[in-house]
Image (spheres, rainbow, N blue to C red):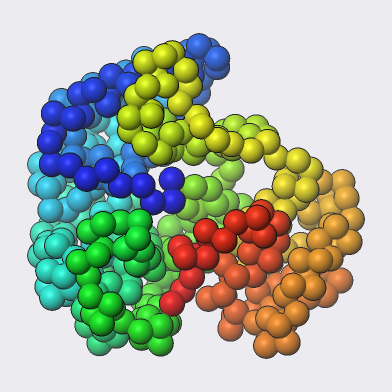
Length: 390
């Protein structure tokens, strides 16, 4: 999901949820057959390490009984550095995880106190080193800009510390202040939030500092060292993007499990119930918990390919899209190209007979470029609050 939160400190609430997950897997495998090959698995949606190791291990065992996990697969998990020790990092590796993402947000103690997420820099570095020693093939750090009490000079120090820790990948997200949706955010004073100009400076500074440190800007909010497989995939033209972010190749169908999760199978997108009670009720009735979805038509597939090219390659190649979809893509997407006129005049985008190219000065705006090709945005205004730089 884009953002779905269930706040609790009660570990015992894991038990009924894991029971429901196992029932959902049984419903899915009744349709797909057991033993379907799995090349990627991601435990996310917040902090999976909230679960004790016994429950987490039992969940993995259940999934391994239900699906066939490839030996060369990518199996990742998000962790909260405040609650995970080096010993537990080693235990996660022993469970089969080979990629890890650490939620950091900011290393400034003042900012950490403002968002009630205090975690010393040394603690995070210790876990990164433990992950390296345990043999994790990929280590990612998540940062957030736009947080209360954050300012450009302080965030620059966070960037320096992150670069010094040398994770292979860095995700840099924009903080979405939506107090109407998230009650805890109502305690944040608007005056404590950085201005749009300050946030733009933070993002631009991050892009420049990461580039000098050898990180490639993959697009949107993701960066990777030049020898990381994502950077290699982008150079070779085989980078892809899905709900989990960038990946080195098209992973095929995505089966999502759990409350609010979104699946992508064939020509269908489907989202599970976002409310825990509703999710439980459907599982108890023996129903798949999906509550909404969409069946893609030919236009959706063309536009999805175009958006993927722009977000992954900074270029939409008419000939490649024509060959993939058997159409005259330039004519098909003429209206979207017209919507880019202002960006073209500003020198951020170039359009010619070969395709659309996002120029260096426009790469920070690649999301806006891609949005011109999404016809569904005209039917909903909800995306704008989440998808911006500053």
